[in-house]
Length: 253
Ligand code: UDP
Image (cartoon, rainbow, N blue to C red; front, side, top):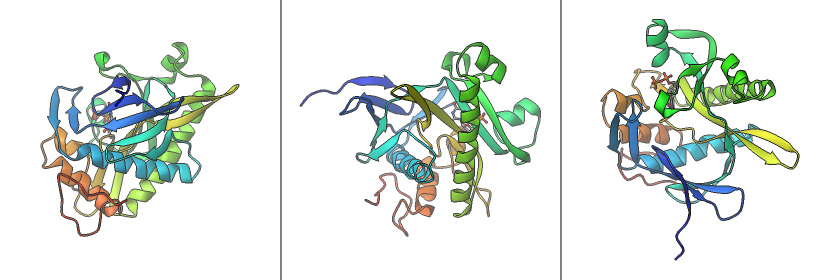
């Protein structure tokens, strides 16, 4: 058996060279990290759940004409994606105040935003992903003015889609982070939603009880992370109905 080429290993995923040029295999690990990797744990089942949930959201986005890097899921832990050049920004959309905006601006957690707020952070772990303005992004050449218009439009479309999908299963989409990639097609470049969309990169609150169903469960020691992600997957119909919370999820298909 030939060993495949590892392109990159991050905190939650490993990227391998794909079977064809221009493709990549994304492997979802069970590792959970928080506070810039100061807190770490292995949570059995998390990788499989995020692989399946990210597939679900990316497929839905592709279906409404929001381009993503997602091609297909390969197995429990891996998906095939288009290779792209990641723009070094974390694009954050907030509907309700939580996390860093609360400490930064002194806003109480749970305060609804007057409208969805889009923020940009420069992707650099050593610097702790600092918040940057469009001025920095333009001056340092991380993205052009046209890119920024496209990124804003993509972020808001993802927010509308994800908010609706979650609302339908009784979950409030509080905030989320996406990454954007460039793909080149001949003389043209196109921006696509890349990386992953999962409860690792969103804040999700049960509308009735306020229960947190995202990575804050791990960040704040609020219970079992796999249980929370299983609950999200089950409500979305990604796990069989009536299945009990499990550490080794049985996935449909
Ligand atoms: N987020 C993420 N990766 C990061 C930083 C943030 O996925 O490196 C997500 C986080 O899970 C939340 C949203 O982006 O859904 C906003 O995060 P925030 O700025 O509040 O930072 P945090 O409180 O997570 O430090």
